[in-house]
Length: 413
Ligand SMILES: Nc1nc2c(ncn2[C@@H]2O[C@H](COP(=O)(O)OP(=O)(O)OP(=O)(O)O)[C@@H](O)[C@H]2O)c(=O)[nH]1
Ligand SMILES: [Mg+2]
Image 1 (cartoon, rainbow, N blue to C red):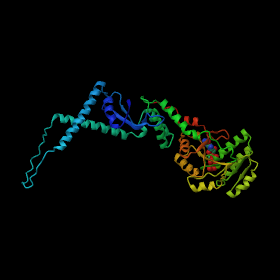
Image 2 (image 1 turned 180 degrees about the vertical axis):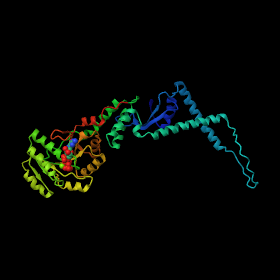
Image 3 (image 1 turned 90 degrees about the vertical axis):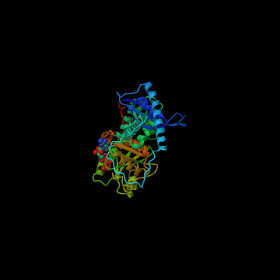
Image 4 (image 1 turned 135 degrees about the vertical axis):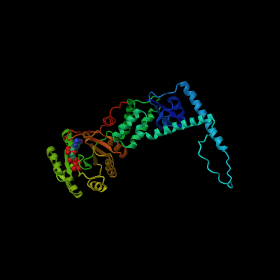
């Protein structure tokens, strides 16, 4: 396949060029608005990028015949238009005598309509022209956006769709990549397309990188849907803090909702030699804090609920302290559905939650939701857990590693 890119003011301007350079069998793969030139991002001119292609082996007009044919095409179209205008201005006059007796219908004969030879040719050319335009339009509507454009861009698009990145973010990223490639005459290869995408994602993620749980926070609450790994994560982090940094850690659990939930955290508390308090309602909290007065750091476990339901969110929120000494971390599993995660995040962001911790990275190879939640909910990823082993299977969120995992290796064309 031979692919060619045209940057023109409008699509009609590109059609004669495509036809004369690639031939009448050429198809348009993609059109999009691009901005080129300008100074420091200003005064950029709006243009249209048209990607056309022809199957290898199809007849491509020679350079000489191309220009001759293009000129002849334009002339023929102009002629035909003038001719049809002339005919419209002088229609044949037919007078019907209403009073005359009805004329018997003659036997059917094949009508012989004498027509001027040049007019036939002109009409044929015009028809051919219309057929070409129709075919091009059909190609355009047949190609879904993810199938259009240069192959490397298509591959990047496909990768982002497969990673469940939000469609709006995919469009933004693809547009920005295309903009960066707009000045190039050659079609981009996968390597450079990926490099540009990586750079853009790096810029995008700057506000969401290098965040951790606030070191000044003495009380850290962990909230999130059922079974995402809140309790396990608390055990991992507590082990890290007490073993690595020798900090005095304490636990509070308000998860009296599920049978055995208290025992689960108590088991970790016993292993780690960490005191633990159980609260049944917000009224029990002052006593629990008094019991843990000597603790430098208190991790509070909460019951997993269906937090797409806002009532459950407000319930858990009533248990959470909100002062400069406390912080809430939303725990989400990467195995969850993006839409559900967004709905849960929506509900917690309303209560001022800013930090998110992702679990079960080891159980999936789809990572779009980290980007989605950062970009759409301004949630800062703090940790990523990738296994069931306490305390090892957790690490701080690393934007660079994340981008590598999200984009994968440049797709071969
Ligand atoms: N594969 C994998 N499993 C994990 C990870 N984190 C936790 N789990 C497992 O997920 C399951 C649920 O973990 P919990 O810590 O009980 O989850 P939870 O959010 O406290 O659950 P509820 O309190 O019931 O809402 C357990 O089997 C954990 O071992 C992880 O990063 N990867
Ligand atoms: Mg739990």
